[in-house]
Amino acid sequence: MSFHERSISLPSRPHVSETQVEQELHGLEASISSSNSISTMCDGLRSLANIYDGLEEIICLPSHQVFSSQQRNMLDGEMEVSLELLDLCSAMQEIFAEMVVIIQELQVALRKGDDAAAQAKIQSFARLAKKARKHFKKTAKKAASNKMVMLLTNAREICISLLESTLHLLSKQIEMPKQSLVCKAFYKKKAVVCEEQLKELECSIGDL
Image 1 (cartoon, rainbow, N blue to C red):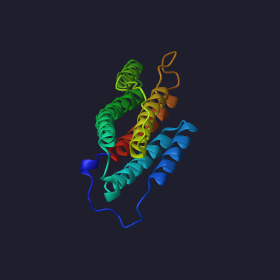
Image 2 (spheres, rainbow, N blue to C red; image 1 turned 90 degrees about the vertical axis):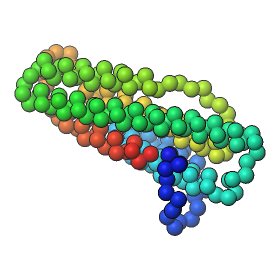
Image 3 (cartoon, rainbow, N blue to C red; image 1 turned 30 degrees about the vertical axis):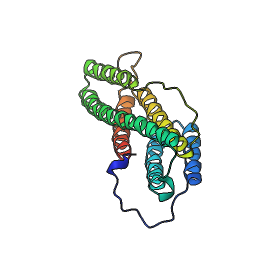
Image 4 (cartoon, one colour; image 1 turned 45 degrees about the vertical axis):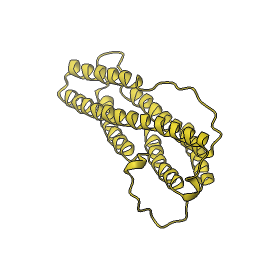
């Protein structure tokens, strides 16, 4: 997605087409809408990174260097919004890193049998998840007459949806217990799984 940071050397393979990218986006959208697992969201982020590679390749083709002034304005506008998405991805990476630390501290509290400390860490996790949700702002959809702009818009919206869904799933992983930690074994297992998922998410977002 960070077009200006990509290497200009591309692998020797047939040029990807707009139709192929559109099909990949539809397939990705279908796969994430029919699943509610964090592993699927990680796979989705990695697939999206490949899709952005394809979009960059198409944009760099000579046939896509000639646009009308209206088309150029539309493309520039979408590219500007995509930079905001980079900021969102960066912010989410930092939040996931903070969540990893909280989960690690929760594991220590659980091993020590310190219920009060464990409860405090779960509350910290919940507060951080709530804070993260504020990064997602609703934007009005605009009809795009240009195919490339439409593809970039769809990719951006899917990325936001992936991140938002992931945050929701993470929030459900570590929830406040209704009573003191009577299910410590359950929370120990949840904490280990959550830490692994968060580290995978950090890597997946880093690929974008």
